[in-house]
Length: 174
Image (tube, rainbow, N blue to C red; front, side):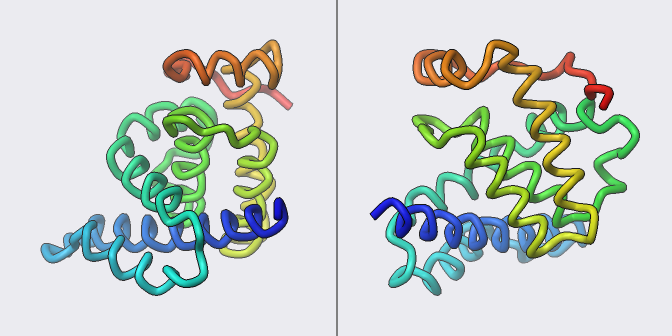
């Protein structure tokens, strides 16, 4: 059913977030033994009976880690008053994961509203009190700047071409 798939993807995003947070935390702390393959294997192994679409989760993790620098370059102009090294690690991980899913995940047909809503839910569960509003604002700005003509044309464009570059994006004034 649709609900089962959505619920399954929600759990998948939680697992991806946990893996990304662990990898980022250990990397920033200088852990010489941090091993992405081990983190993926352990996290996916725990949930292999529960999550149907393990490939989705693995794509998220590998994609975010592989494009972390590029994702950060897209993110920073969207929240200029918040340097990325000053936002919480969990919020940073949620933003990276969601930006990757919105703009860079190959073959993704997940509607932008779903991705942004999922990010907000992750922030409510794992972030600080105001994290969900911050994340909603940053992702909403990113989406509107990349797709001023709306969801339908963006889906067509995403299906047929590369993601848009947000390097020159400025945070929208609210």
